[in-house]
Length: 149
Length: 101
Image (tube, rainbow over all chains, first blue to last red; front, side, top):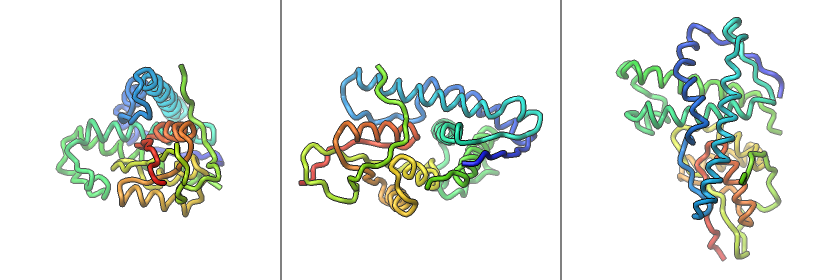
C-alpha cells in the first residue's frame, strides 16, 4: 500500500474531533459491541474480552495519533501500511459506538440507506451523524488504496 | 492470560462452501450489522481469509441479504482464532458446531 496523504478541512473536522476524541479514548474501556464468546467458561470469556479490549485500545490510539500537530498546522493526515488496519478498525469501533449511543432514534433501514432526516435531528444527533459519515469516508478512502492481491 | 492477538490469516484449503463430512468441525459465521460498510466487510474477508474480491463479495451479500454467512468450517481451535480476528475487526461473529453429516 502506498502512503496516502489526506487533506482535511480543519474548520470542518476540528468540531468532529471534539466529538470523536473521547470515543476513541474510550475504546480501551468498553468493547464496541458485545461479542458472543466461543466458550462458557468465565475465565475464558474474561481473557477473550481483555484481549479484544487491548487490541481495540491500541487501534484507538493509532487513530488519534493521526490528528497530531501536523494535522492542526496543515490539515493533512498520513495513512500507510503501518497504521491502515488499525485506523480502519478504530473507525469501525467508533461508528458502532456512535450508532448505539447517539443515533438510537434512527432505524437500521434508514441508516443503511443513508436517507437520514438530518434537518429534523437535534444538534447532538446531527454532530453524531456527521462523525458517523466522516469516519465512513476515511474508511472508504483507505480501502480504495489497499493492495489486497 | 492472552488468548489471541490479531493477525491476518491466509485461509487453509478447507472451503466454507464444501460440506465437511467430519465430526468435530466448527463453523465461523458472520452476522449482519447495520453499521459496517459493505466495502469494509469485503475487505476484511479478503484480508482474513485470503478470498479474492468475488468470493468476499459473495459472502458479504449473504450477510447483508440473509443475515449471516458461513465463512469457514474446520477444527475448533482454528475456528476460534478466526472468530477472534473477525470480532477484532468489529464484525459480529459467532462459532457454531457443524452438525451436518
